[in-house]
Structure formats: C-alpha cells, structure tokens
Length: 94
Image (tube, rainbow, N blue to C red):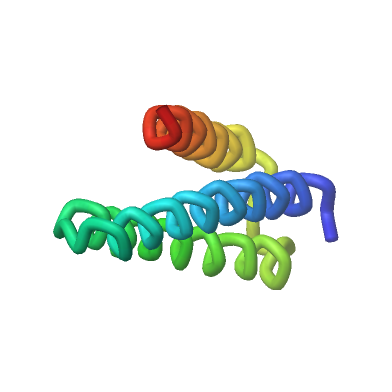
C-alpha cells in the first residue's frame, strides 16, 4: 500500500470511530426519549459511516488508480469531515 492511500485510510478509520461513538450516543438518547431527532441523527451518522467504510476499502484495494495530484484534495476532504465530526461530537456531549 502506498503511503498516500494509507493516510487516507487512517483518516477514514478515525472518522468511522467518531461516527460509531455518535451513533451510540444518539442510540442511547433515542432509547431514553423516543424522540425523532436522535433517530434521524442515527440515520445520518450511519450513512456517513457507510461512506467512510466504502472509502477506506477503496483506498486499501485500489491505491494504484489514485493519482498523486488528487491526494491533497482527498486528504483535505477527509480532514474537513473529521473536523466537522469532532465539533459535532463536542456539541453532542455538551
């Protein structure tokens, strides 16, 4: 595996960890309140989790088709998503 694909995969895996935590938190909220908002947030977080699973798998299995020129953009998107998820997690925990 090339180092670029490894870095992209690591960012996707970290995103999946944060999303897993969010799904658990929203699951507990839904179990306590039966409100629709946490249920909707579980669906959104689940879809983002699926996006990162597919992305990480693609980085692992198809690293030879990714060009070096696109790496900074893909890394930027992954890091931006991670930053947004960490802010979302902090807001959720407050």
